[in-house]
Image (cartoon, rainbow, N blue to C red; front, top):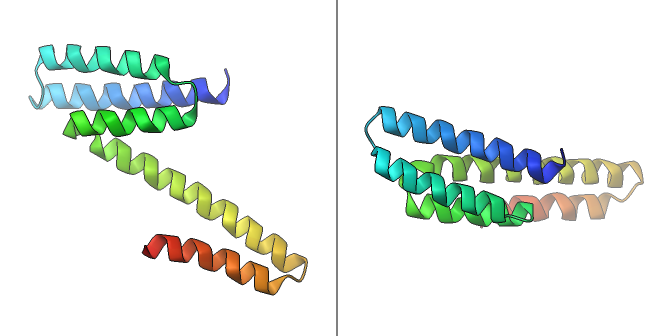
Length: 115
């Protein structure tokens, strides 16, 4: 299974868990669950890239509030990955004696977080 298919499966599982919880808590009806399920199947199947999945999740959370926590979690995971990659880049630059470049790279991430 390739990475995109794994992401699709992981997202589908999280969505299903949210739907079950919402149904049990009477936040959605069985009819709404059916509508959401069709939307999810179409959207996930149509995704050809990770960016497509991100757009789909944003659209899903826009249509149904109960999915906003999933969107927030997904964005937080993405931010964490970016920060990890930048930290590795900073360390690599420091190992090669490029202090100025390392500082600029680290500042670029901290400035993006405050904007």
